[in-house]
Image 1 (cartoon, each protein chain N blue to C red):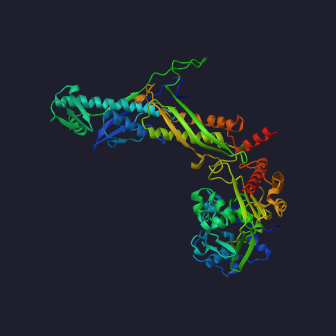
Image 2: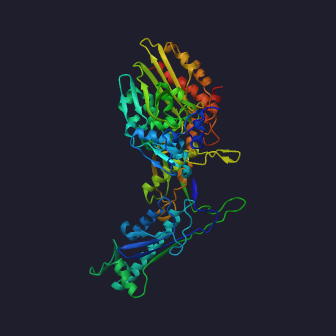
Image 3: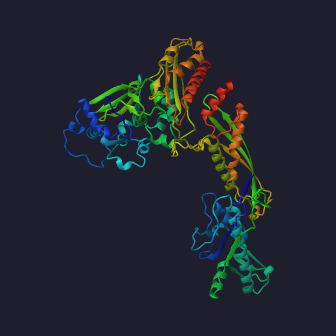
Length: 319
Length: 321
């Protein structure tokens, strides 16, 4: 179980805005940093869903204090939840403004209109139709800017300093359980993780393939933590300050991961989504250590479990 | 003082002057040239003779590069210290694999990947083909050469134990001529060998192993690719029809200052019925004959335990074949 967001009552929020720009595009302004986890993809998919407009129509700004507002850090598994929410609200705000101004153009009521693929039209009079960008130009002539803005700023709760309890310590919780199959070579002490199975409760996968990618990456990191990653210090100096000696798993060390996504929307994230970055890795090291115990009957209490530790433990067991 | 021909980054260049102490002429004078050596020459000859001329003239003042998989690590963040390069990669004469009736001759620029994928080498020299297939990664195997692995002379060089087990000979060439050195005599310490600054390794000559040879390669490391071996083993037995071991060669890497053959184990195995080999005794002989250090790739204790256990397991597999 992983509580995501900063937690502990921190006043966390994210701000985003959307505006139609030239060339049939809509600009999403957010300063959420994409370090490979896919928050930009998530932002586009959410805006696309709300505006019923294909993803190709969206472009993203870079994080820039001149043109974007705070989206918080890419950490604490919070961007899909916070920025996803902010983009959703900004897209809804833009959609509301499109309806508002188009109804004035069409001289119709809001329920008698629709939008699809960048067009806004009247159900009453089929001739009354324009694109979002035509509407934008018309409004610009009148000095009105067509845009949508969204802020997600949920109430957070400071925990009691004595008990650590709060109404809600974190904004949401992701659940992940993992089963791993390992082979322990009792001759050399080498451990091979042959297969991993992950079941992850993420509320709703905005992008299932990206969620699987996060689970696979997290499994590789957890494997490194369990079996390899170790800063070796002697007399205050690190003996392995580079990637040839500080070992992380390579592609051939990493097992195939079968991922089962559990989407029960038990959460108030955007479309029910939860964060998945950090919860992806927390199950792997304990699962590997349990599997090693199952294989050779030795329980380890110190990571990483290197081939030396396996051989030593097996030698002690024989005696 | 011992002959010092160490090739590692720290003294590759500094030792240049020292090598004249044995009465050799300075390489520059060998060619009778007084043209000053450039401060940043990039020499990439297409012929071996030209390369040997450069080698004779520059000695350690030109760093020899082939695949670069060791050199670029040696000189990481120190490239400005290299005064000149001698790039061998254009010399096609060093890239051949030749198989005669008696011998297998491998050019020093043949890559690990070529050896790993060569069907004839897989058949005749399975230890070497298997070891080459486990060097670093595909990328390193594609660039790294067998000659580079030999002249780097790391005790953990993956191809070295197989070359010892196959009784390989190395051809060292210079403008003065060629000499052949047995693999066992070539390595003298960690990253140290008997090569002289004017020499280049050109060929590796391996006699065909007898037909009734069985062998086992083992690489032990902390992950499955991109890893310097914790230890390696190349065990080779020549066994006759009656299961008698006619000769045994047991070569190990990363368990001593150089890759080495374990004579006591070989003696024990030779002339014995394979089925009568006492596995525990063989394992103990192997464990006693090595002199490993503790480093980040394994403790001394670990290397002793695993040397014993892979020796036992390899012989057990051979008995049950």
